Image (cartoon, rainbow, N blue to C red):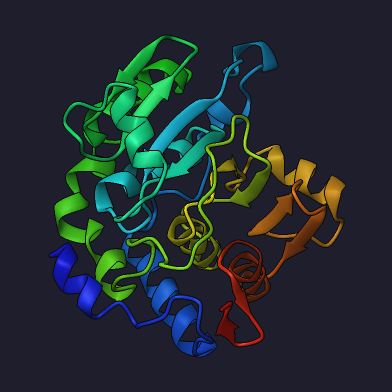
Amino acid sequence: MCPLLKVFSGGDAAAPRNRFLEVATSGLASVSRLPFGVTVQPECAARPAERSPAKPIVLYEFEACPFCRRVRETATQLDLALVVKPCPKDAATHRDEAFALGNTSRTFPFLVDENTGVVMNESEDICRYLWREYGEESAFPEAIVTTTMLTGWMPTLLRAGRGMTRYANAKVRKSESPPKVTLYNYEGNQFARLAREALCELEVPYALANAGKGSARRDALRAIDADASVPYLVDENTGVSLGESDKIVKYLFETYGGYVDGGAEA
């Protein structure tokens, strides 16, 4: 199905977009996956600092994949920060990095957890692992995986082609550890999805600071900007911090996509 979606991907990912259509289709995508990826488990919201992962949990994935999506939903509900290394089709950096780290199946998502030494594929296995390791003994929500074949493809279809293929003019970047771009996000937010799609298409590695409902990271975000809401981007490479998904997408393509004043750089 992915090659077909690529044909209907909407053309140049960096070109100006119909804002109404963007928000509407992303909103429907969020509705299709409710209630997943929105609210933090109460047990995880109350997680003591000493029980939080000390080292980054790295997720190799791409936005359009429904199986990657349920891992991101799980991370939101467990209030886990991730380092995301986007692996869109035609990726220049992160797919090869994942293969070198042991992704022998060459499929995504692919998780590397330095806290436990776990390296694994298979989205259901990853979701269950994260819940077992960081779920604070809360019950695993079976529906987060059993509904994937029913509703998991809906965001992919509604956002056909977005967050799937590397933008042809994207600047080739070295993998960063830790990444210098941070996105405050929660998976079910329709505006955050637009920002994640752009980061994926540009293959920009980023820290995913999940701030679902009930997360203490919402207070951390307001400490940065009292008026801030999800999504919110902080880029240490340029010193830029900004909210509003349309502004974030425009900034990302101008900064990392060689796209200036309505056209690609020569």
